[in-house]
Length: 152
Length: 386
Image (cartoon, rainbow over all chains, first blue to last red; front, side):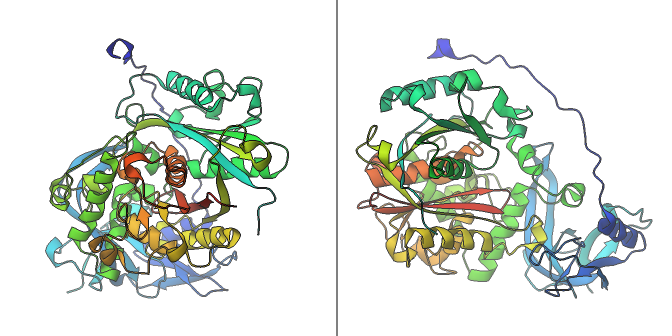
């Protein structure tokens, strides 16, 4: 069917973006980061603490209004070593391997995804104690919590 | 819960899935549907309602069902669209017939993720824009790797065993005339030698970027016999949504799938799925999801993923065959994948599965997911018997 192979393509870009309101709960979380604090909320019904804070507990359909500052320390639950990165929907080789972990902060019930540095990928195991490293000059964005590293 | 009417899958047809379709999607759909109608001996006027299935982001058009109207034969017809997985399009078509207002419903699903859009961009747009997308750490690949490792840490599945799941599916796909990635001689070693993505996942644990389409006709019991002498009955269905936030979910238990499957089994009168189900088609975008999802669906005991693959329990001819078609490892046209799972499960029950045929299949289960790592799940129990 070679004569039927039609491969002329029209490239159609999508060039706009969105300006989402992050909501009061996330604003407060970001304000906390700007002071190098990690804030979560506690559900009045199930008692679970979520970080980042959720303005509604999905399980209970209630509004958690009790704010909790959790320590910037916790333990590694699951992890992966990235050899690629995804940029604009394309899979590209990473410059060097990097570690991503799901971290259970002390006092939180949810897990936080984060880059983990300062540990040999071969030595990764669940339960390793990690601490948060903040930007030197936090600006109140999600990037303020830069990465986690092992507690000495 | 029970079905208010009996509804059958009377036929289906898929394209040979490719990395780059030889024809544009309009022609792909037109030819597929024309051939399907001819095979079945049905006219377009006998199709009461049409459920299209794609995704606006994949099509690059808003309310994207507006564009293929002519090519799918929807002009002047009752037609709607499902933007989630193809399995949800089956659910919607089923409900339209259950309403009593329709006797036949055609499901049409397609994706051009091999050649026209970037799968990973589509998946990134499912993520929480306020947090995860700002951080840029979680994507479909890294999330699936974190899920895979969580299962392996919890249940002792080894990297070799995980690779053996991929080898099984790639070998099965070689028996599937519609699959794109076919490797008759696949080995765990070859899987582990493929391009590393995020540990423990390599390229061959995942899916090929795929162009493809699938159509399926559902009909009421009153009408089904007009077009088939082997109706596959939808005996039960369930669907369930997990929380949106990746860090708030139990990636190993996948409660949303557990509940969807339990609903489907309750409706179908299945009390012991591990013993009663013969074949399963699971929408496991990465092979690590196969044991996770199979266990959530009660097909194998919790944490038994290593034993299942070591003992060949899920092979064609094994105790409970999983993804005889190769599953998404063979082809993964986005959203169409869930419809293909239903079609391949039906193929097993009608003896139409060719080299993929699992012997004596009387009852099968099909699963579809939307989101990453099984956020939303839909399950069907299919049977040749009422």
